[in-house]
Image 1 (cartoon, rainbow, N blue to C red):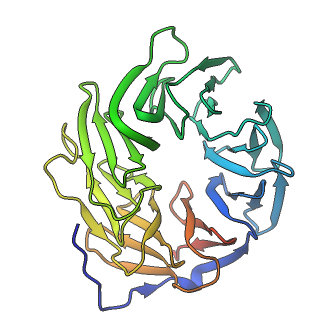
Image 2 (cartoon, rainbow, N blue to C red; image 1 turned 30 degrees about the vertical axis):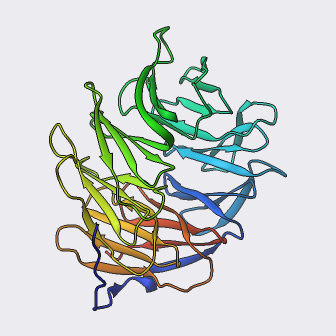
Length: 340
C-alpha cells in the first residue's frame, strides 16, 4: 500500500463540533435514538440527550468496562466484574448476566433483542425471549458478531472463526486459518466474514464455499472496521490512511487493490462509514478526525491534530447520518452536527 501526503489542507467542520468531557478512555460510542452514548473504561456509560444534557450511569461500579455493542435501543457493555449490562437511553441499567468476576471479553447484539457474550472459553447467547444457550470454543474469544439475518453467531478465536446456530444442536461451522483472530465482522449481505488478526492483517472467507481472502500490508494492527451502507466496501484502520477493500462480486477483494483515503502522517485508529453516503469518518492516533468522500477524495476536517485527548478510539453516526459522536483514549469526546 503506497501513500502520498496531500498538500492542500481540508475544509473545516470544526465549528460544528460540541465538546464533551468524558474524563476516561472512551471504549465505544453509539446512538440510542437521539441520545448519544459513550462506553467508558472506568465503568460508566455517559449519555448526551437531544437537548444537550449530559448524565452518566454507573453500569459497572468500581470495575473496568471492557467491551460494548449496541442495537440502537440500548448500549450493552461487558466488564472485568463479570457482568453484562444493558443501558437504555433513559439511563436505566439492567443486568443481563453475571459470570462471577470472569472478564467479559466481547459482546454482540442484533435487532431482535438477542445478546451474546464471551468469558474465557465460554460463549453464551440469549435470544429475544431470554433463552440462553452456551458453547465452548476451542480457545478464548476476542470477537463476536451476529449474522445480518437469522439467529447465528460468528466467533473469532485462535486459528480461525466459528459460525454457531445457538438454537440447534448442530456443531458450529469452523472457518480455519492459522493465527490469532481478534475482531470479526459479517458483511450486510451475509456473503462474507472478515476477522482482524494479531499478525497485522485481515482474513476473510466467502460463504458458503469458505473461500479464503487474505488482506495484508498493514504497518499496524487493524482494530476498527466498518462496512459502507451498500455493503460493497470495507473501511479499516491500521495504516497512515483509511484502507478500503472492495467487496463487489463473489470473490470479494481478491485480485483487486484496496483504495486509500485520508492519507496523513499519523496512523488511523478508528473508522466509521456514513449510514447513507460513501463518506467515511477517520480518527487518527494524533487526535485528528477527517471525513473523506470516496467519489472524489475530498476531505473535511472535524477535529485538528494535537488537541488534548490522545488517539481517537470511538466513532459512531446516528441513523440519519446527521450527527457523529467521537471519543478518545484520554477522555476527550465530542458531537459533530452536519450543517443542513
